[in-house]
Length: 210
Image (tube, rainbow, N blue to C red; front, side):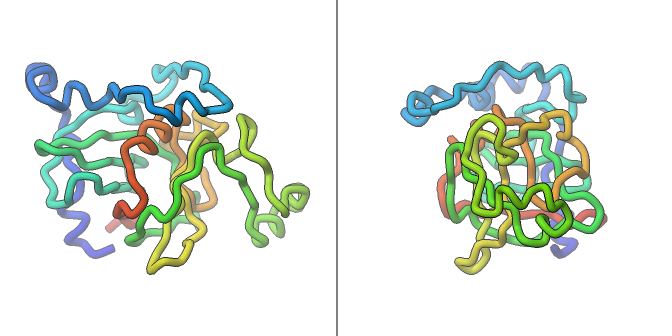
């Protein structure tokens, strides 16, 4: 990523209580139920966000950048994901990013969206962890699947990058460098993002330290 993108990154300054309740941003965290909720085969149990540090809890924040509403911005250095809203605001979510040697950055688009996705470990992952070979043909979606409740598949120039934004069975990994390169979110958060983001949405993954 270029430094200009870093300069234009999301401002994480919190909205004042008065501004939050005065504007439309006050309603952005309460997304109405949708048809896909009724079709969800595995309703999610509640998650206690107090188990996460405050900076990794879902929140509406001020946004002073130049990106269009609907853009997803992932700040790998702070382990935070933003979706840009109208009225100079964004929703900030905590996330987990790739551990050392597995981080990546660049521009992508959401090429697919899947509810309770199937997980197929890449060959290099199986080489590192042979016990995953039993899922070489894919692990069915469900509560024990490491991709969690939803996945957004990231494409570049029409090709699957093999990176995803997805849920997790390890919510306490949020805020850490813990994955093999994918972006993990609390299941409730990735469901919220999934509802808001259409296929084709732009995703900006910022390089750590840039």
